[in-house]
Image 1 (tube, rainbow, N blue to C red):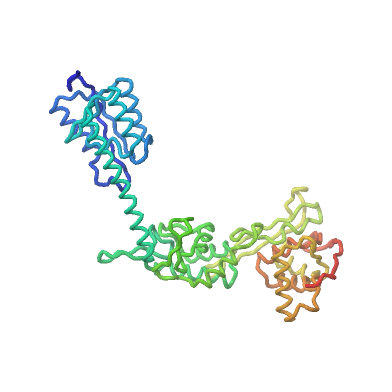
Image 2: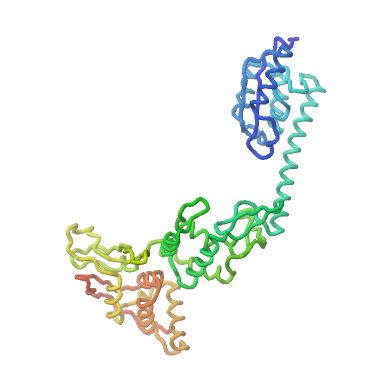
Length: 430
């Protein structure tokens, strides 16, 4: 039988960056201690391998797999490591080590305080120690989950709270409190969307002009604004883990009411064609250029005010897809609305394909005007509703209205003309 001096050892050092091994000795310390022991005991270490990787899962450590391969090819016959749990914390990797010992490829494993060779008792002890490490891992995971669940049931959501809050630790007690700098903006943002139907871009311009930033000091994006407005944490509820379907009542301060939150969700649940937060130019798919036949496109411009703020202006112009030198001038959105109001009685509804949302809106408008639906016809109510939306509706309402109009209109010298539409039946009652 070979002596220890004849065995070629590989020194294997490992430390996981995960929280379960924060107390484990560092890799440098492991190498230093085991190198000193090898010199003291005359062990022939021909290579040092190290890696930072968790040993919870079998076959996931590239350096350890390399070590197993070297043992199979007889590059090494022994392994030097700080403790058995450095080699394995799962049954799969432990089985690979025992198989190598059974086949005579792995003659000796030496740790700081123990020695394992190919004998029944020592292999059994090795399996017990590595299995104990796995048990500790499993128990730790169960305890962590139990602790998180208990924390959630007490109303405290794990992880960083959303913008408008911050974590506070005082006298050993941790809680979530309002961010006095950002919370007022969050409250105002919900009210602007719910009560004033502000769009995503309008909210972003307001926040940017107000100097609102994230905790990292960066301006918020429209997608971040959307996620904040969809976050139930602000009215006191949270789901943990995400997409688990398990909801808890939070103990943190509520920035908005559930009623206000629901009003915002109604505003955000617009059809995909008019996605909330996107630039909306209601008339760009509706009008064509009378000079060259190209589609009309929208464009927004901002003009600084004396007080430092900005005014937003929307213009429409020929896309010049047909004629790059088309002479048609730019026209303000207000002028287009004015022109359409003068022709509102000639607009025709695409009655066969009218969107359910628009039909419902027309019915509600008709009831609001006359408090009855017995004497109203769809075409007549549509004209009255169109006038209302053009004068005081939101961009979303105008876009939805335009999508359902069958009239074909063109624009020339800032005037709308060439109304061409097939007449539709006005006999359908609401």
